[in-house]
Image (cartoon, rainbow over all chains, first blue to last red; front, side, top):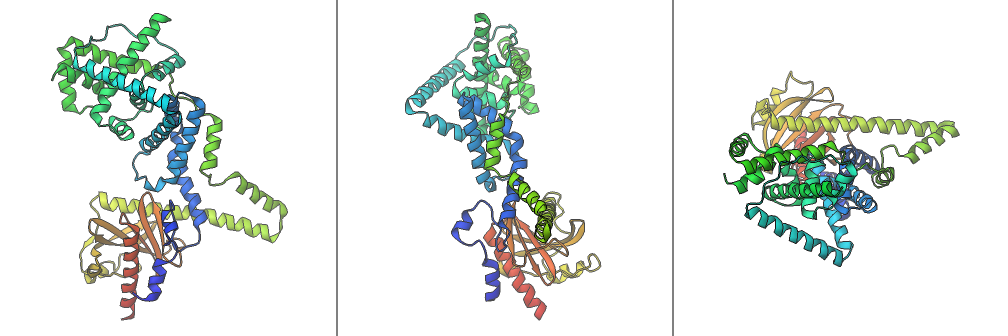
Length: 213
Length: 254
């Protein structure tokens, strides 16, 4: 290889800083245009899922203002790391990022609250484990009365984190078990048993609400 | 199947997540076990009850605005305003500015299409078992194959000694124009090298872009547009481009 060709092929973005940049064109001088193209591709792929991202944030954080912050942070991170997205459906990838943002928010909300939440979940997990070990009573054959969306949302919001998350991902975000496993970092078998437990808990809360109302 | 297993699996059945074999097994268990049948009915009922209510939250307008701020729109408001201002001022400068904006917009979408089609062709070649029309590691077999099939003579270079094995050639279409494709392999990675004319204004110096996770290297050589697509990492793809060009120049001079 001649010196001339070496120059030609190593020109442009060989500096370390350029290498870290999310996307680059080497050796040409249209970086701004390509950045726009990249933003456009990202918008086309990711924006249709904003409703799902915001909804999951609302259920995970149980607070509109925090959910809005989390969704914005999610899109900021996703845009920054768009190059690491390796194709396939983008929704699980976005929801996984959102879940990480929400977990950081749990931590930020203070150690005390986090400890309480964890304790609650650990207790709930234990209950779930023990219930599956025993012959728990089978659900009574009563039909669930219809509640308005707000009531159902409140009932779901009261579920412990671990179970709320899989239930929302399945029933509201409409993800497959495999995708839920990817988003939550839990094996598919665990997703399945958590979901079964989540429906049981929600059913109990539902029936209690009927009695109370 | 035990009831403990079935109690969980009926949920997967209700969710349509079981393969046919497991679905049959669970259905058989449910048919002869009242407790698991009740669990299955409860799961389905819960799914129905949840479907009946609109449980998604509407995205607030303020959030959409905030995201526009984080991820710039293609024709952002400021750009449009600047363009209108240019027209209002009149004169040659604004006309030139407007023309260049139009040029950029057209070029960009044309470019996007070419890159998109190159990636589609690359994916097609891997999926449909149609990687090569002429399967040969011999450049003297591959080069003549293109005679009469396309109105250009692609530089066919054997780079086996440099670590890129020529495995054949193919005729493909990019942007409605025929393109000669040379197929190389580096370890398990396939490189499709498209050689054509009029593949947009390819840069004077080689440029590397990432589209849909693929690396695309574009350059011009001997009046032809070259475009290499691969999942190979960018350093090695650039190495490929450099070696190909060096060998092509050497071959042209000899």
